[in-house]
Amino acid sequence: MRPIMEEPRRTQISKEQRLLKTGETRSSARCRTRSRWKPRRRARPPRPPAPIGPPWRANQIPPPGAGAYGIVVFQSKATPANRDKLVMVCHSFVAFFPRGKDSNVPVVDQMITIWPIDDPTSSRVIADDCDYVIDHYDLTAAESAVRDAHRQQPQATFEGDGPYLIGWSPSNTRGVPDKLVLVIDMSADNSQASIDHKFLFWKDQIVEDPQKWRSGFSLDRVRTAIHDFADQYGQAMLDAIKLVDGK
Image (tube, rainbow, N blue to C red; front, side):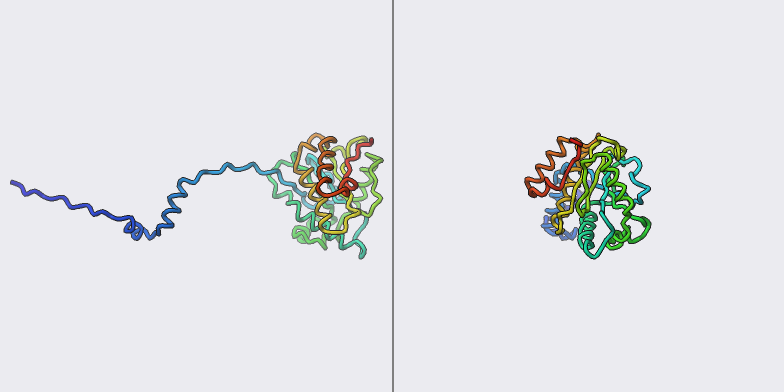
């Protein structure tokens, strides 16, 4: 008769022993366990960015293929009297707009905001050096923009010190009679906050809402946005932001 061989007893390993064996603590084990059951959050679709173009010379404007565009317009080169204000305008421009090369939106679906410059290849331009881009601002582009806007809509006036933001949509309507022109006048702005508000309107209410500009500026939508913005930021917005339609 064969001897009966007893099976080895299975040792019961406690939870504490397992944790010691794996080097975990109770808290880390709980975190690991909970992470397995963490529900996935549905990602919100991102808003389209408000790109700026690469630095443009006057003869490169309008940007080819862009859905719409606008230009930061100076009345003159920098002087000791206006330099501080132009620096504030530059700071707003840099703060509110990413570079166009960072955008994954097709150019035809973009409204591009342009700071015209006579030396777009400089490393100081790429570094957003405000002193440099002010000193190398392309005044020819600004004068051309004002001339075309006024020819397009004689009611569009540029009698203040500026600067201005002037916009066209679609981009091929520049200089075409009776087409709408969007003008934001910063002549009365002498603080960073008030200049920021103008760029905030331009970016949030216009550039990032293609329904207001995709097939040309929507008169009703833009004017509603102006009034709503003025309710929050004051009457000065109504005086400064105009969608000029010749009526």
